[in-house]
Amino acid sequence: MSIRTDLISEENIAESEDVKTNEETIGGIKIETTEIKSEAAAKRIGKPKGKYCTIRFSRLDGIADTAPLKTAIVKALNLLTSGNTDNAMIVGLGNTDITPDALGPLCVNSVIATRHISNELKKSLKLQGLHTVSCIAPGVLGKTGIEAADIIKATTERVKPDIVVAVDALAARTPDNLCRTIQMTDSGIAPGSGVKNERAALSRETLGVPVIALGIPTVIDANLTGAGPHTTENMMVTPKEIDLLISRASAIIARALNIFFQPDLDEETIESLS
Image (cartoon, rainbow, N blue to C red):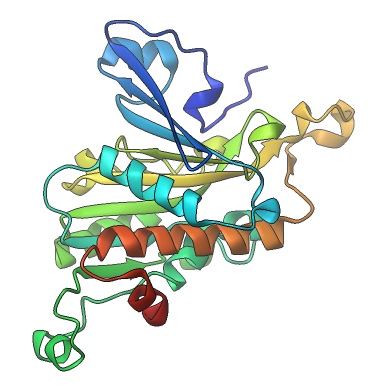
């Protein structure tokens, strides 16, 4: 039986001419970078061509100081982006009615949206350095009757961002990765693929702008937990503290996105606005 995973770190990867890897540590947080350079390598590994950053850390309910983790996320965003990022759109994928799937929508709730703020208002607030950020949580097909990708594509065509960042919960194959890993990639994302409910992909090819996918694995196939096969059919398992973990994860990711997309503001100002 093949158990899908959204994580490139759980695939068997050997460095070669068309696959390059690198590792660095920032404040005790490990960042592993893998670049798949060819379609042949992508087919061999089972992941789209592009650059992937995997950030590893202790589980979020055990981290007191989150500053190094936010710094690592900002570092990874710098590694994955090139060109203009002054006009960004943050997309929160997922379903708020299902806690392990609520990462994206909760995250965009704490991202500073500025597209609606006029230059005159920025000047009066002494925030001339604000960059343009818009946020959207498109919901899920079962609640809206509309594919999230259709909503996002229409919004992208209207807003015309320089870059889209899609935040989503992921599926893992290894229990040790649950809520202990952040994966970021410039190859885009196919929402729901890890739980065999794949929706239309979000990528540069489908949206016409660079797409960064950012996610944390929150579920694992129950067949990998050791329980009997009669009790695990079509079941996913998540940590029992998932409410706290999703709350902390969404807040940390939102803060990091605010820091990255508002480079002219100090963190104190960012905290006061978010």
